[in-house]
Image (cartoon, rainbow, N blue to C red; front, side):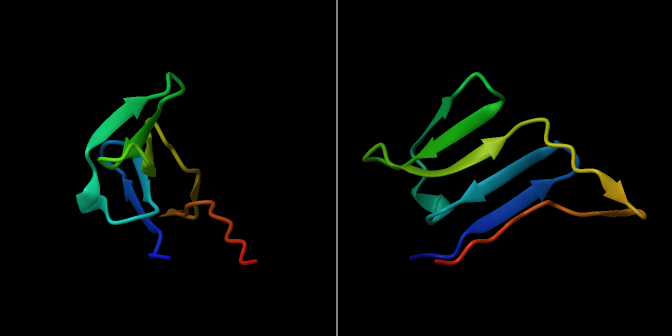
Length: 71
């Protein structure tokens, strides 16, 4: 399994999450919920982009609420 990559763009207010190599992106599909699915050539979802993602600022530092579960 590859590393999960998370990128927050504070200027565009978008959160990008990739489960596989972002360079294999081939097509994107809008879900209508301000979420864009990122797919490879085989149509497998390799990540997503959340539009209008605005994390709460705490004490001047922006923190992303991420939970990691390892099974």
